[in-house]
Length: 486
Image (cartoon, rainbow, N blue to C red; front, side, top):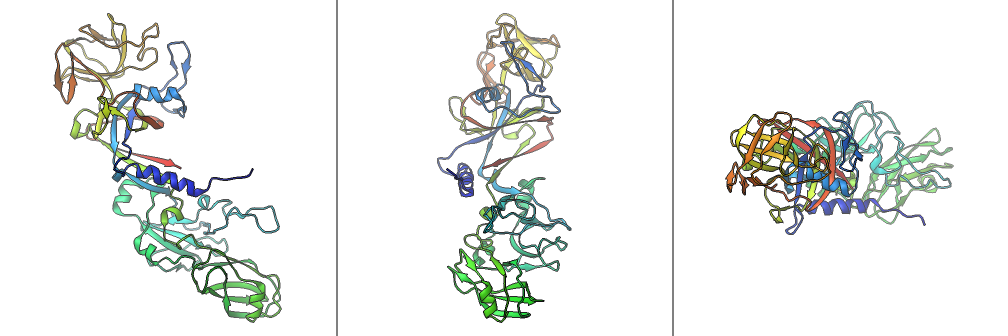
């Protein structure tokens, strides 16, 4: 049984996700960073391997239970995403001279009458939102292409913010939609995507059901030359009027002289053109282009395909509000989006959360090295060093589910505990966990040990991305943009 889920469902899902950041009882979302160790094929405790690709070419994470839990295992930190970090987005399409842009049509994908062929854009796109029908200019204005001059190249960049339709010297017709603000440019403009928003002035000027463009589908022949005026646009609207120019017996131009209102379909027949003075014209067929609900510019998000949501988060050094939560002593390769995690047994709410475990050591000899294996011989515990704070004698580490990363030779994952010595395998550094309860550098220790601030395996992992390693520094800010398509 033929059926589709329409684009409206995609908009609905995007809107619901976006609203989760603003609702009074909405969700709490965190951006997680992790995976300090290099991507490589890792041997599991049961001798199976997990192919994670390489640092140069990490592979796409699997969508399964295992991917959910291991994301917490090597997580370094998480930062809360606020409503100001979220926007609707669309693919970025820069205006470039010499490009043939697709024009807006309401009927892409429909079968052409009398054929089994679907109506497609000049680019070959069979849906409006796959078509290249809008552009971003150098002035950071966004325009919708209403007419591409019979698939000609665009050579004149549209300019201005007038609410009326703009005609350029190359025969194109454009509709100004909105301008990217300075904030949108700084936070929501990437190489491939850009923010989308509705300009209130443009929206207020939009006319629901107006007709501004009529295309020539078939020019016909035998008509009386001249410009024939006063031709009514028929349909379920009113007030629409056009004029038709006939040259050498064929229709060569159609001009809308009154857009009218309320049209959801419209027609201009060959007989109407004949009655207006094009005597003996035969075979002419015109396409009345129906505007989106509300008119062009009424709702830019839906008109331009804004079923993408962009999340923009910056990691600024170690994050001064909670010094040390976001380590700069190690790199990261994994980004995740976590919904409603817990912290200390309750719903997380802090701006940043440390995701590593930590030990406060005494009697340290040597220096622990980032990414080296650490062991506790008396318990069999195994881990990987994330950071060694030599000033405060704090060892930050992770324990994963793989050999040489978090489990012993028998495949057991055992917690570090007691006053048993912790030894680094590559550096031979050693230290003994304290027995005191203390708070050092915003990290709370009980008997020398501290659990992660974010509770592992709580909430839902909505997104996982593997990337090439990103090296951090105290005076450095990493700006991370996630694009989620619905």
